[in-house]
Image 1 (cartoon, rainbow over the protein chains, first blue to last red):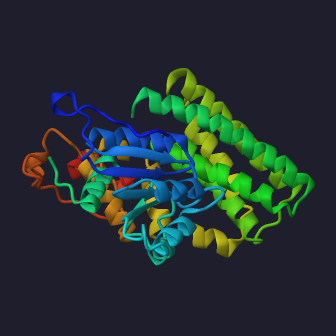
Image 2: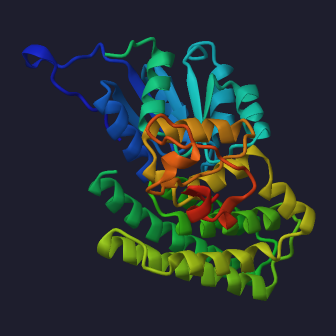
Image 3: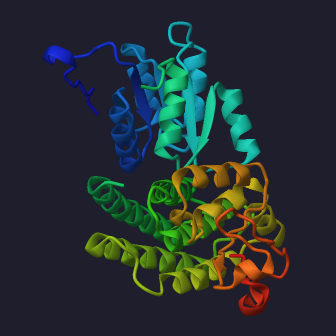
Length: 140
Length: 218
């Protein structure tokens, strides 16, 4: 659950890399996001449900949220609605990732405040491309 | 996918299956227990999401069918009978056995496809007709079928993505296997430049010896 810091050039910790909060109740999915996105140069934090995710957002700064929908305690819709209703954090871009491929599910996500909707299983290349797009980081 | 991801999946899947089975047993005694139905649904739903990271199509199909049944129960469209609880528990047991296989040798056993097909049919036959049709159609279902297709992993990643995107747009995805016969050039085919007259509709009945190629839709 902790932030990962990897040494940049000269052994210094590179704090300029975009920081992503991954919110998913599946530890396997979180591990997948972390391994793909850290390899692409992002810093990753994790939360296991919407409530934990929202609490993290209130105390730490993130450049992107990657959010599951169906989670205990607080689902992804509620979490992003809460974020969008909070002036201090409402501008953080959010990508929803869901197993549901229906148009209705995507529409609900966008209504809740999603900026992008991906369907599981997400290919690493697609996940990386969307993370770069949302954080304004160009491909290497 | 990495070994640590597979280890994580095995560990998480066992926990989710335990949670789902325990919640099902609660539901059998207390049919209207909302917390229990939510727990079993979420466990199966989470399992479906994480198994999608791996190439276990038989596993995905069975979990997907279980989730559809639980979704119907949760929505009040399907009564949870004792027989249905037993069918769901059987499915969870089967999935648990497959998790053991995956833990042991990283793969599902031979025959898993057949077992999955039978158990999936048992689960889907209890779904209300219109509910089943609604769940089994549309771009989402087409994409889910595509993900579960056994030929998909053989394609390059860019092609897999293109196929998935097309399925999401409602396109019908067909896999065509082309095996040129030795004298195919004499019947107007040139596989080296991609000139092959596909005859849509002939499918598996197409005799390779006379038509110059052998392909079947899968």
